[in-house]
Length: 220
Image (cartoon, rainbow, N blue to C red; front, side, top):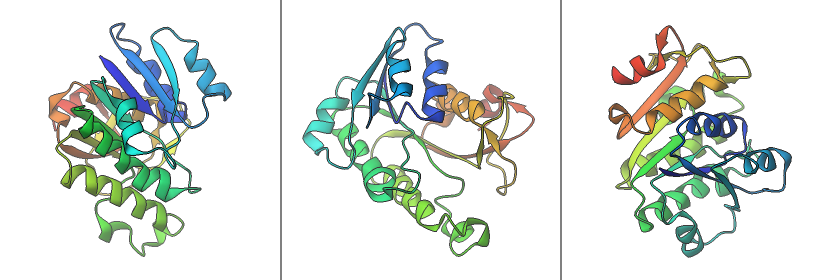
C-alpha cells in the first residue's frame, strides 16, 4: 500500500512508521513541516520511506490535493502541542480531509484525544483545565471527519500518552478516562486498524488494559 503519514516524525508517527514497515509491501511518505530535522532525516534513510515537506498553515487545497494524490491511505498524527491549534490540529487537519476526498483517497485514520467528541466530558472539567482549547480543536477535526466527509475513517482517541515500553495490551472504548497509554501501543493500534474492517467508520477511545490489540480490534 501507498501510505502517507502526516506528522510522521513525531513520537507516535515515528513508531507508526516502523510498525507499518513490517509489511515490506508498504511504501510510506512522511509529510512534515521540517524535513531537515534529525527525526525526519532518520526516517528518510529507511528503505521504502520518503519524506515530503508539508506546511499545513500555508498550503492551499490544490497543492495539498496534489500531494495526497495516489495514496491508498492517509494517517493524521500531527500536533502543534498548543502552538498553532487552528492551522494544525483543527483546520489544518480538515484541509487534509478535503484534499483526501479530492484526491480520491478512501482510507483516513486520525489520532485524536480521549473523548474529544463528547463535549460534556471535557468542557469546564478540571481534569482538562489546561486542555480546553486543544480538546475543542480535536472536536472540530473529529466532527468534520465523522460527519462531513465520505472517507472511510477511523478516529483513535487515546488517553494520556507515556514514553514507556509497549505492552501490546489495551482496553478499547472504556467507560471513562483513567489509565494511560504507552506510545508504542497507540502506534500499534493505529497500524493494526489500517486493514481491520472492524475499525471502519469508528470512533475508538483507548487506554492501557489486558486485551491483546488484534483481539480488542476484532471485538469492536
